[in-house]
Amino acid sequence: MCDNTKRLGFIGILVEDLSSAEAVNEALSKYNQLIVGRMGIPYRDRGVSVISLVVDGTNDEVSALTGTLGRIPGISVKSMLEKVKKA
Image (tube, rainbow, N blue to C red):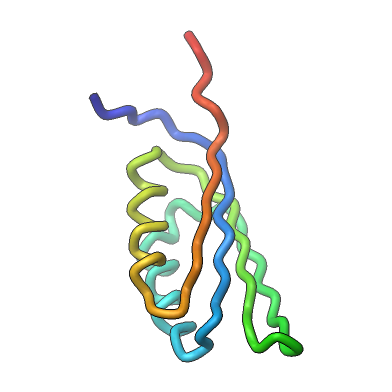
């Protein structure tokens, strides 16, 4: 059964291979309708970038975004969505 309930959540993205940044930006542009807010922090001392997203979408939509990001080489991604409210 598919749950079309929109839920608020966040996604954390660690860009360990900076050459993958363009692919990350393309994925985020493709799913821009889910993104409420975005913050990117370059951590130059470690040679990585950290991106945090606030998202609002269905579980399937957010999973599609995180799956797309997770397939990009040099990218680690984790997400968390609010709990489904009981009727």
